[in-house]
Amino acid sequence: MDANEVTTRYASGERDFRGANLKGINLRNENLRDINLRQAVLHGANLSGCDLKGANLREALLEKSNLQNAHLELANLIGADLAHSDLTEVNLNEAGIRGTNLTKAILNKAKIQDANLNEAVLDGAQLREANLSHSALNRCHLIEADLTLAKLEGASFANAILTGALLTGANLSAASLSGANLDNADLGGADLSRSKLQGSTLVNAHLVQANLRGANLSWSSLRGAELRGATFYRAKLSWSNLSGATLNDAVMISASMDYVNLRNAVLTGAILPDGRTHE
Image 1 (spheres, rainbow, N blue to C red):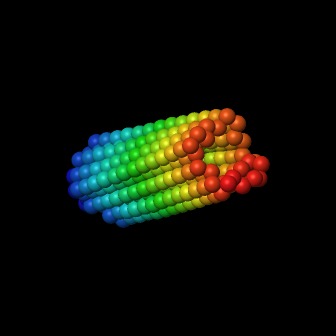
Image 2: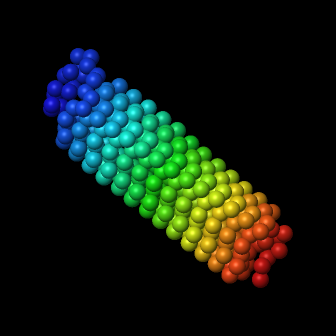
Image 3: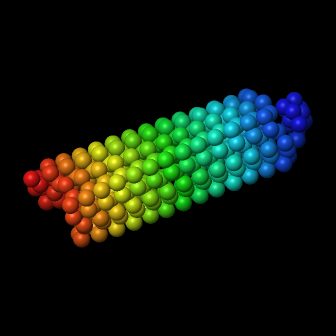
């Protein structure tokens, strides 16, 4: 089936193209709202600028496809394969992306607010300046993903795997990261104020100048973490493991630090919970 046949049939009112073989098809800038492409083969397809709002792309094969600037609000992409695809500046607000394969996909400046990405795989994906505010990314895989300057406020990353991820300057205020694995992640300058990190692991993570004001880090592991200049004002750190961490010039005023493990931690210049400066 070629592009002309698809657009002609769509214009006549047909919407069901499930399982269609559309490999390499060029549907750039077409209006295909509410189309049913469930389990369709779209390897290498050009869908850039395409209006696919409300489309059903469940379990569709879209590897190496071009979806730049496409409109996929409220679309169903559950279980779809978008590995190595280009979704730069795509609109996926309120979309269903659960269990979707986005390995090494490009999603820079994408709009993915209020979306369901639970259990999606985004290992090595590029999400620079993407907006995932209030989206669900529970049990999501984001190993070595690039989320530099991403907007993630209010997002849920419960039990997600973010090892080696780049989150420099990201906004994670009020985000839920309970049980998440952030080992070796770079969160330098990130805003984690009021975030929930109970039971998370941040072993050897980079959190220089990070804002952890009011964050809950109880029962978390920050062994060997780099926390120079980080702000822990009124943060909860009870039973957390900060052994070997670097806390030079960190601000911990009014932080809850009951039973914290600070063995071999470096605290030079840090402002302690009682307001004293550690020498």
